Image (cartoon, rainbow, N blue to C red; front, top):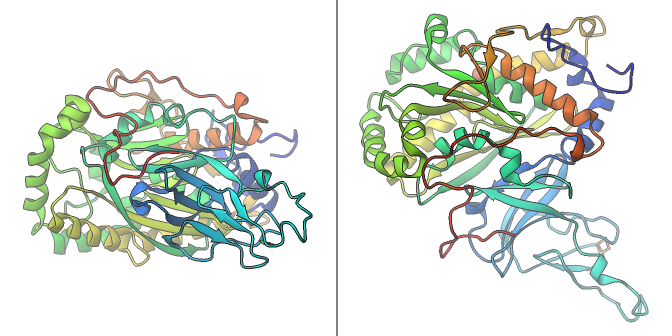
Amino acid sequence: MAATGKYAVIDPATGKLDRRIFSDQAVYDDEMQKIFGRAWLMIGHESLVPAADDFFHTYMGEDPVLLTHDGRGRLHALLNMCRHRGNRVCRVDDGNAKRFMCTYHGWTYRNDGALEYVPGENEAYYDTLEKDSLGLIGARVETYAGIVFATWAEDAPSLDDYLGDARWYLDTVFNRRDGGMQALGPMKWLEPVNWKTMVDNCSDNYHVPTSHLSSARVQTRWLGRPPLSHEDQFASPNKHAFVNGHSLTFRDADDNTPRYVHGVSKETMRLFQEYHEATMPEVERRLGTLRARRVQLANHSIFPNGILGLRLALPRGPLKTEFWHFVLLERDAPEELKRVIRIGSQANNGAAGLFEQDDVDNWRQVSLASTSRFGRRYPQDLSMGLGHAGPHPDYPGLVSERYISENNQRLFYRRWEEFMNADSWAQIPLDPITARFDGTATMNPPPRSGRAGRG
Ligand code: FES
Ligand SMILES: [Fe+2]
């Protein structure tokens, strides 16, 4: 890995992966600079800061960041670090404030980041302090369908280009309704895992019948959900697709079934089906027939650390990840349906979620294997489906032939190498946008009253 000073951790011909990347402190430090210091990172959702002067405390990698909605309707992502000595200027999770006062010496910042007031500006600083250059450090902010992203990199491409053709798939969850989505949460907890294990797991459907056997049986028996066997998984019409670091799995079927998984049971199925049918004309207008009727996005990750919708794997060291779980709901869905989805989402993937508990233990063992002096000599094997992926006539990105494949994992680690080996964004390749985006949905809906604007 370190022989040339460059990272070569995945062998594309064999799928062998150097497992040291899960525990090495120097690799982790490099990731903070080269990945979390330059990628577009999911940091929140407009619905978390709907009104003027609302703020939400979030993170970009390990860095504390304030997502603010200023008095002019613009969004900002501001490093929560006083420019004087570095004290945090805000100590709470969210709220509404026009200003943030540092509680060390009292420097006071507006919620657009500008340094407004310094005690003793005349007396102590003799009027020489350059306040204009001492505002809170701001990141670039852009939004996609209400999800807020930010990057520290001045030279990063637009968010539209960064997501690229992945948006063709993402729209089928995040961009279905004219009224957009709302985020609830987050629920937060710490996991003793490397952040990459949970990202790469987003395309790992192979583990489901084994790891989640008992959870799936409970769901089949008590909720009437379909059984999850290897046989079903191998015969599934689902596929994987990969674009610009983003891993997608999707269902390819015109079976007029509701798009949700969480909360669906034999008792609630009618609610989901009615909602699906009632909203289909709107969804078809927004996304076109192919995406509205045939494509159902399943597990996915947005490079680097956005997973399964609006859920964040925030790195806290090589062997620790802070997990933030939001529930995203269509704003105009019936309240009863929202309630069922909210409860179902937490029952599956919350801190006490049936599926989440199975997963965390796997990720912990995978992370710890990286610390074994002997074990780390032997690479991970990600060879599944090698040579069985490529362009598809209907679906954008690199598409696997089968649902059960490690194509997305191989490409995720290759994307990781591209970021880790690049000196700047100019050296990071981006796939051109080639997908046909039928329908009226765009990156962002036009502003409407009561919505946050974009900065
Ligand atoms: S550290 Fe913030 S005012 Fe001194
Ligand atoms: Fe899982």
